[in-house]
Length: 249
Ligand SMILES: [Zn+2]
Image (cartoon, rainbow, N blue to C red; front, side, top):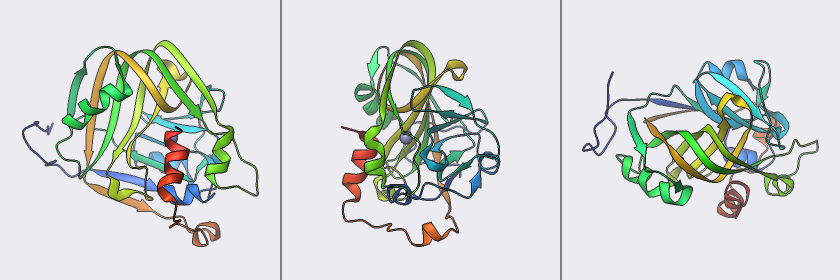
């Protein structure tokens, strides 16, 4: 298997990340997609996203798509469900590291920064292990007419998990992709066995493994819908909207 050594300052193997629609479209309230979960799984066995109507957070691990609802519970999604926004890849752990023990998200972040060979590429990120706690939130299913995401996420419930095994999955995205995707680390949590999860706000990892898969190619599939073609994809307050909906501080 091709592997990357840390002395190289760029990835040496091409690897595609597939994305359906845009973060800015989601912010504008484009919550109904055209792609089914079955189609999306054809582009990757690992990823995150959401479902039509903003009906929960999506986590795809080992080719299985999980739907996490606002109470933190999770079920397996069906192949004919649709998604307005998903980022997936076929995960290959090119960089693997045992995480130092008892670190919070803020403490683990510089370690992940030091593991990436360059800030200028995309990375799929997977952290598997034993968590002391994980703080998540999950979007609440919306009804039409859809409101913008900054308003839709005001009613998000926060769900905390304690003393459990699980996986944090997502992407570390360069700032230049702002609007296309969420800049920085955007990660979701799935408890072992698919018993629960959500969009990750913070966590403390007791022990575990950090794995990274560099992405060099972005395959972006835009929806051919009237809603998407009329969307405002370049709002003046894009930074603020992304911060409010994804970081939740
Ligand atoms: Zn999320």
